[in-house]
Amino acid sequence: MRFGLLRYAPFLMVVSVATLHTLIPSGIQFNLYQFVPALFSTNPFQTAIAIIPFQLALLVAIIGATFKLVGRVPGRTIHYLCRADSL
Image (cartoon, rainbow, N blue to C red; front, side, top):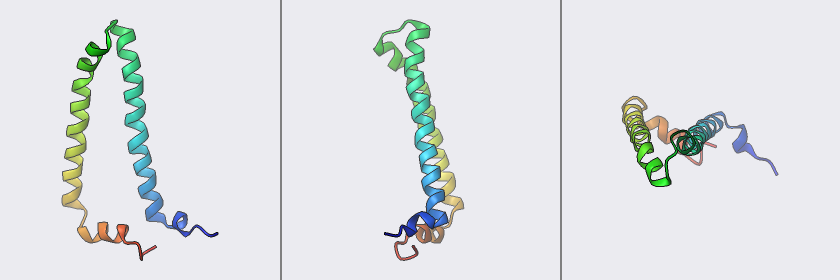
């Protein structure tokens, strides 16, 4: 069985970027949720309240980056990367 999809450079680029965008925030969040209670001696509710600014900043950054990229990347490029017959 031949896997041609893994030899397609744009697909590998998208998968690599998506993996980094998933692993980095997940690792930060995991460590942050363990670090805050140990450092500040907080209960789970207080920890959740303390993490809200980070979560809101992350949400604003993701939304801002998305809107910035939508204006810069032409729709034709996105269509080309998502077409099944271009593989």
